[in-house]
Length: 633
Image (cartoon, rainbow, N blue to C red; front, side, top):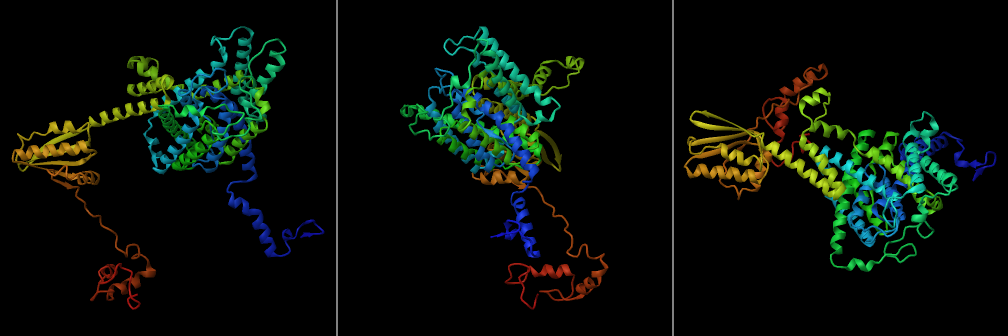
């Protein structure tokens, strides 16, 4: 009921201390359950979500053109993947959706569409690929393979970003070509498109730098689109010219506003799933799924690390991959292109104070509302404005400092000193940057990353193998080899050649105080060395192997029976007595003196407290020192 005087609920009238406590708990309970959801937090996160949403919509449409699919396929994927990953992912504050990395992979499996903005031939294979990629992501999370993001060296990441930027940038040139002749557009159409593109770039890049608060709130991408629409319909078309809009290339309609399972026959789709049964096509589907899984996982975990460096809160890589897997399963099922974390928008969110899940959720909701209810507005956006917005994204994605690294690596020392260019890194790492960049452009981003990691791994293996150092000394007629450095497939052959069995005395020792056995090649080398000495009637003993080396040898003992070895000697540290810390306390010193003179529990005679308690562990029939009878307690 209500109070007739105040027209408010009776439970809200604090007529007693208990009622006051209940009201206080009701008012403060929600913030406890939803930590951080203060009014200030909600306002900031909602504004950030709206800002990022208006930036993500044109990006997603542009990525659809890059992937050779229609924009609804990308936008539905953007909000589905974005919502699931925002709610359940392991990195709050990270924005997810349809990305350039996914689009770059999808592009290689689809033919160029006959009309711009339409689906390329082979679109039917995309949705099973996305769902299988989601399943593979779940396997990555279940097997905790996300920790292998640590294996990505910085040169590979730099090449990845540079290659992705160039691929996205190259795709923005397509609207400037005629869809029929594939020749460059000319005349007033070209000039108007360039004017809209450069105007959008200027607004996108420089308006946020104007020192007025309103320009910090209104998304620059939204302003760029508004300016472009105004130019198109207030200047370009009244003057007799014309540029393409989204609605003229791939119109959003009432049929495309809701996600439909890809296998359902619907007016918005014209899929021919009979092609999936063709010979060899399932192989392409699985390859595409694997590449999407690899690229999506790499970019998401890399983005998670970037966001973590800004917000200073821990991430859960496995949970991030799990959520992304579920998001791609659902997205593929409903005819979406799938997606992963968006490093650019996630960085913008983090730099502007976004730390929670609310802002990315608002972004996903905004995209969903836009495609389901505001799709007529999307149809009037000039395509040239999308190109301008994406070119700004490209400029920020490309790692421009890497150009200095390349130039410095090509210069001799005296030229770098003269130009004060102290930015040289090992030339092989510069080669990796260029290799990953070039392969991303001409082959595939996933292949490029794999090649870059392989080159860096081989470089590290070679340099580590050259650090092996062996010193030889003779003590009392016994020769000792002191081995330093990792022992694995690169250094094992070097070690074998160091030993001189024919010239050595009957007793030889090899000390591994500063070394470790890393692989089977090392075990096989030690076995060969032992066999060589044994054939000459001599003995060799491998001393001071660490625990990991012993584990490797013991697991392969049937393959290495001739190896005679000992582990590292262990000196037990002196542990403090149980009475340590009490002796100087005057409140207990008298009690300690009495205990030290008393008969210890479980033993006879006099002794210290430590001795008495130490004897408890040897009481017959007891499983632990504290399981005593009542009298003993």
